[in-house]
Amino acid sequence: MEFSGQVPRRRLGDGGPEVPVLGLGSWNTWDRMPREQVAELIGTAVGRGVNLFDVAHYDFGPHAENAVTDVIFGQAVREAGVARKDYLLCGKLWLWDYPALSFAGQAEVALDRIGTDRADLVVLGDFAGELDLRAVVSDVSELVRAGRFGCWGVNNWSARDLRLARDFALAEGLTPPAFAQLKYSVARRSVPDGEPYGRLFADGLGLQASDVFEGGILAGKLHPERKIGADPGGIRDRIRAAYPELRRIAESFGATPAQLAIAFCLAHPAAASVLVGVSGRAQLDDNLGALALLERHGDELRAAVAGLWIDRDAVHPEAAWGADAR
Image 1 (cartoon, rainbow, N blue to C red):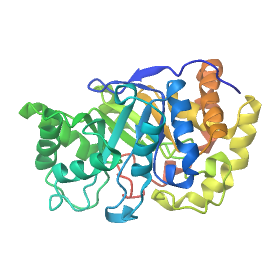
Image 2: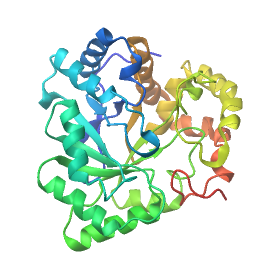
Image 3: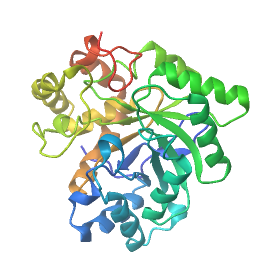
């Protein structure tokens, strides 16, 4: 299925900007491509309206990889001749070493590696253990006030922690989180579709879906050779076994599995954008075809894949990315 128009935009929660419904992630993306092709792909994406880029400095906690994907992105966007005003940058702040490693210090390094002085959005990474959420909210709000970031969100937090952060920010006149970046796919729905997050979405929180292909498995790469995301509930083998059924359903709509995976996420009422990792023009074109699928069959998609909800009995709706199974 093909999509030939400009990518539509949606508002990312009540407090966020308008963003394209498809955004490009950076983890294990730009550093897996031939350098000369990165600028061409970025220029093509921006030309189609895909001008949201999630770019992080991956050298913290479990992501202590000494990756240079962010540096490559910064070089490529300049080589592509894309002006800073013509794209949206979503950065990340990590909580693994916080507060010993301050948000201000992280921001200085991360933005300098890209070659800019601000990001339009920033995501506070997932965490394990206890945090002083009041300090977290105060520190990131100060960076928003200083113009380093336009707004902020969280990555795979529990609904409880996010509610506490929002309530504190609103009570103290600080900047509340505008969105949640959550693992979400046809197979993993318990947290984004659960009641705790549902109440947050009803209050104006935006949803940014990530890991929608389960590291490539739901796009047909059943045994990825690269490092992929966490496996809450230990269900990855069940997801792998479900791929033939996903492919069958996608083909019944005249679409690819990847297109169905993206369109499903965009059918969520709070979803503003889906993040994908693209390492070539053919992948970008295929992913854009999800928008044609959504236009033609949006009302049918969620019912069609109802039987592929695999984490229903494995992950509690309140859970963070690595938290309790039922």
